[in-house]
Length: 200
Image 1 (cartoon, rainbow, N blue to C red):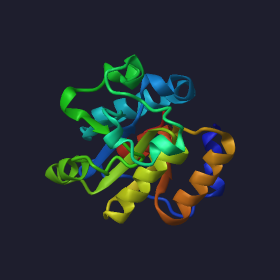
Image 2 (image 1 turned 60 degrees about the horizontal axis):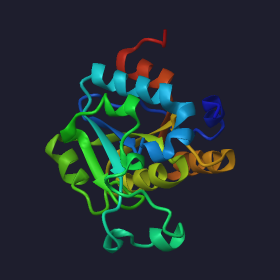
Image 3 (image 1 turned 180 degrees about the vertical axis):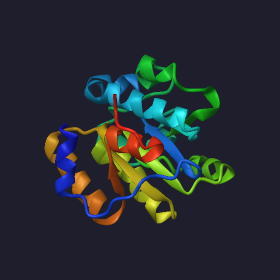
């Protein structure tokens, strides 16, 4: 997706505060590898920028262990789910090698906050802001961004390091995010905001 298109939706501008920000890398797993491929480079750039700025990073991994945790997803997706212990459930290798075991959060629904310890983990690190990256722009990323906003976090939503199911969904999410939930950022703006310098 052309991240420049987000500027037509942008209402507010702000840079994240590296002292109170965390990066959330949502569901960059083998199951979504083909969808994630176009944004993989930007996702890695975002992770590296945040590491350089000493920003905490959390990687979510969507997986199901039994029918008891399917919720509505089983019905909605006709039981085409991501099952724990499968190759599909593992982080994409390029992302996995950038993660640490204590940074991985398992989830079983769209929101990274539902049925997880993510909120507590963020509070322990005194996080007040989150940057959202990963897949899908219009499902887990958007739902997590909305949940973060409702919980009182300032939200920054990546326009070039989130991957959608299609371009119309991407545009709809960015319009919704900018209107009511998040500041829009891309790699270039993130680097300028964190370090005051442009991308090489």
